[in-house]
Length: 80
Ligand SMILES: [Zn+2]
Image 1 (tube, helix red, strand yellow):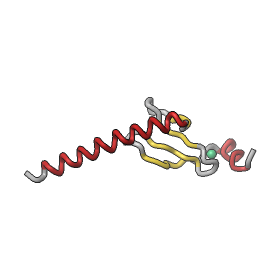
Image 2 (cartoon, rainbow, N blue to C red; image 1 turned 90 degrees about the horizontal axis):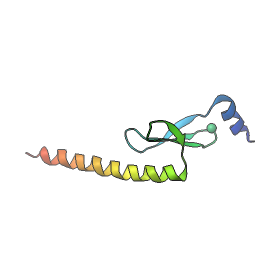
Image 3 (tube, helix red, strand yellow; image 1 turned 180 degrees about the vertical axis):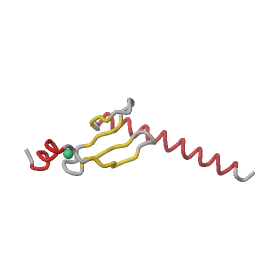
Image 4 (cartoon, rainbow, N blue to C red; image 1 turned 45 degrees about the vertical axis):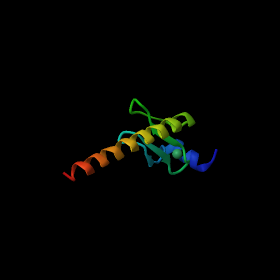
């Protein structure tokens, strides 16, 4: 067991947002042991498994497409 792991077990993980996926979904990384978490569909934190990474990538794509469309819409409506 590494000292950082022991620290996390003892004091808890020191999570920081490492990626913003959508308004409601973030990915978190522990500054000490690099363990990763993400927000799941229930709004709870869960371990960032490869499956969740896939889901988040899909979510991010959908989210970016939508915000891009919204921006274009507001841009074109401001012309008139
Ligand atoms: Zn940790």
